[in-house]
Image (cartoon, rainbow, N blue to C red):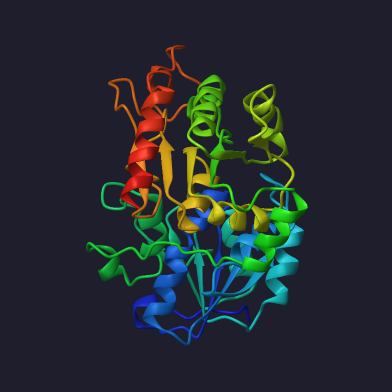
Length: 352
């Protein structure tokens, strides 16, 4: 006889072991910590393990709520059916509850293969049966990414109400911080401001590099050193900002691990960022941050911290959520001047 699954409902379950299928982006993974905090606050004895891309393991290691990060070695966009089956089979009998944050079919496969009794997620692409605690996806009520994550950790009744969000808070490793400062030859005494010129989504979320360069020089004139941070992909942008400028403007793009980035950001007096993953890392590291929004909306993915200032013009043409400006003028970013950002940063730092 084929295995039959119990007709379960997460409202009646207090899980002791919870498996979360995490998101695939840096910023989303940081925001997912709000869910992990919610699970632990509801049931302190709950253990939370997270299936995630291998790159995100150092981020999850900075979240005390997470017992274990379980890497899923699939490429971005890869179905990887065999890999998911093998991982799911290895996890059988270990969990009472699974929460699937992405809305894709493939994201729900590992908990299904693991035969986790209760599998919670939103309605998505052909997931009926794969997920057996299906939640309605109400965009008007769950109007932020972080709300969507946290709602899946609540009972259906609570998820339909106005609920509190516990902001992310990444642990900082002071020893690793000192080692990173020494390895990179950075001045630990001179106050630093971090700049994050990258944004994986596309040009419509990227403040002009010439503006970052002008801002960097203004900060140096104020007595700061400037650390430009990002991935190897952002290295040319970092060079554009730093080359030929002051020796106090340093391009660190591609020279740091994710763990080092977290600790170096925590060392900074402040950060200036596009709407990007590193903006959310800065918020999680308790670094005052200026968030610059172009095609996206700060109402949907705000930095989850009280120490942030959002710069967003709210033009009639936005938010368009496009990778490139459909009107080809990018006014939503070009009309936020370096002086606007410089003044906002000075005000934010003074308020701290």
